[in-house]
Length: 369
Image 1 (cartoon, rainbow, N blue to C red):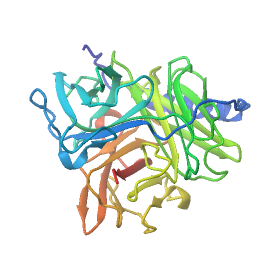
Image 2 (image 1 turned 60 degrees about the horizontal axis):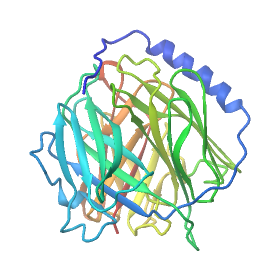
Image 3 (image 1 turned 30 degrees about the horizontal axis):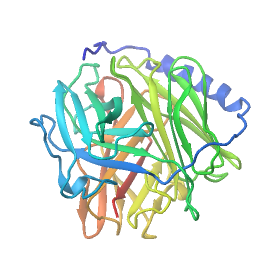
Image 4 (image 1 turned 90 degrees about the vertical axis):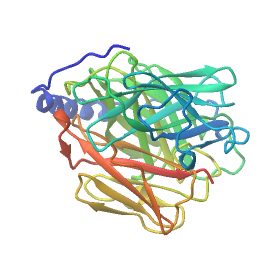
């Protein structure tokens, strides 16, 4: 795969002003009407953490940080092959099928981001293709977490709410799921800006968690939540994507929203999971812990340390997404730790040129059980 290498640009300030104007226009636009559609369980899901950025062929990543819905995941593990510099394919066994979405988060002390290139069935399994980049846009090896999930059908007694979608550059929805049975939609703004509408989900106040991942096989791109407007009839979420020069850029992307559910969307959630949104403060209904404990945010911001008490249960995973109107992106500084039942997620964010910054973010943790 060839990536375009771009020199740092003076465009970030202009980009931020452009984004803010576009966000105001999009949020003011009329929301689309909800329709009917299939809804979810999930049917198929898996997650893994690639702990070795230069894996040998058929590498089995950290067993305590991978699991899935297939038969005997403890003895039938996820495997990873490296395709080239910064390019990987993650093989999830026995969960192959059309549709679904994926997320990926870089795990690195140095500035990197990881994105999706593709995902598709491979025999009975599901292959998820991941590419990782330096701030310049050059491909580079990196550790990462990866999640795949696919849902359909509505359970009899669902908990909370969940939705996801995969959007084309134009705003065409390539696949989607909404636990109310409504239809998620996307409308296109200017370059690199979209509005997602998830009817019937969440609350009229800030509640739940959002994750967004860029999808582009051609070059480096990172996507984030630029703004979020909860409402009594659903959630309006603004997505922005940037290239390595910090210019707004048209890429495909995936989005998931979960309220009182784990990041992969199970209607009957695992016993141990949690999430947190930092936007300068910690809105209470976006700071959830399934043990009823209180999550906390510490650290200097380079990195932050999110502590989720009483939920540490291997196998487990985590995802992180940046929030705000600028080109900053976020990941995990290191793999999460488990101490005395608590999970600690070190979150780091980067600005233009890979400079560490104190930026807002969403993060979500879940165990398999």
